[in-house]
Amino acid sequence: MKTIPAALSPELRSGATAACDRPHPPPGLSWFIWSLGAVFYLIAFFHRLAPAVMTRELMQDFGISAAALGNLSAFYFYSYWLLQVPTGILADTWGPRRLLAGGAMATAAGAVLFALAPSLAWASAGRLLIGAGVSVSFVTCLKLAAHWFPAGHYSMISGILLVAGITGAVSAGVPLRLLVDGAGWRPVMLGAAAVTGALALLIWIKVRDDPRERGYASHAAAALPGAAGRRTPLAQLKEVFHHRNTVLLFFIPAGIVGAMLSFCGLWGVPFLTTHYGLSAAQAAFLTSGMMVCWALGSPFVGRLSERIGRRKAPMIVGHGLAAAGWAGILFSDRLPLAALAALMGVTGVLSASFNICWPLVKESAPLRLAGTISGVINMGIMLGPTLLQPAIGWVLDRHWQGLMDAGVRIYGIGAYRSAFALIMVWMLVSWFLIFFTRETYCRQQA
Image (cartoon, rainbow, N blue to C red; front, side, top):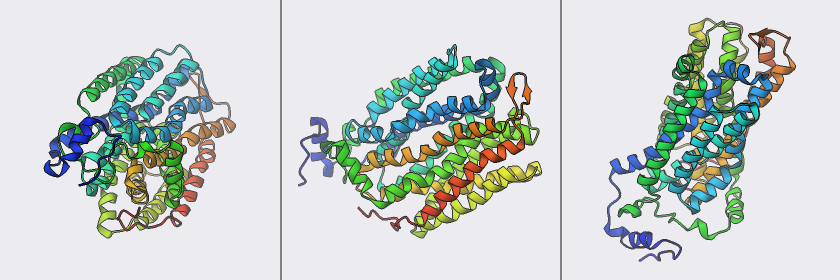
């Protein structure tokens, strides 16, 4: 019989002792537990992209330029980025339930602060708190998946989780634009806060960290809760970065994610309204459609990777073709609208290749470090939009030619092309780094 770690609670020790005599949880229960975390991740994406369709309202209400707007939006990413490693460590020690419930409540409070903000400083504080709250959503969902589902489902579930996130992004597109047109952005943000607060309560009541807390056998036999917690956080981080893939994958996905969240999450709508003469709702429809294609491609690339038994090849091909697609979107002269929509859709699907980074990095380090390594990689991923959103705004302001419309700055196509060059540089650097990763052949290596 296996030795049961003393660090486990009596309830978990009892469950572990009888693990061989108990069945795994029914799929319906596993999906329900995990889906509550996935809904929170949906909300995280909603808040992440909400400023994209409210650029005019935010610039008018707070009297700000493109650089200030980019910084306001990026306050979400500042706290989100900084908390990824602590979140990963806490997911391995405290467990997902407490992090998810507390994060959802903090997100609700941040949304209230943002909605009621009388000035840019208060709005920035609200975005900062929202980012801190939702920072736990992705890592904890992966941690729940490792305990509530068989290992072979991990790649598929990470793809489905992105689908949930993109659903939130779509809700922050045309639907949010219509709600803002009808009720104003502040009441809509207050409504989002109420929904998030209710979710926090439901998570606390229903979610459990491990199936053994419900009397079932756990799928995380190789990573019993508490195993990572007996080591210091610094020791965990050192072990995580001991693996070459961790270092490389800290930077690689930031290229694609930075492009998607900087364009679809903030600067795509004003670019399309300026360059193509579209309305804000039409531009939001195109950027939302691109996000949908991104989501739909994620489970497909995960299955493709499993089927061919390779991780690197799909990432290299997908990332390289996505870079070519972005070049066409950002630097072509005015394309026919149908061609533009098709190119954005295909590029969205190709960009889903970044999602392979999750099974690749999971297979490159011990399972007991799943939370910590997920936090490290998500921190690297969010480095893309964290730096690109305000940097693009800064370049736009540097190339502004003095045009205004109803108190809002208007930027020419030359300014956008100069700013979007930052996206292409990061995309190409991250694509180059993929070649240096170590292939795992879809098997746990550590």
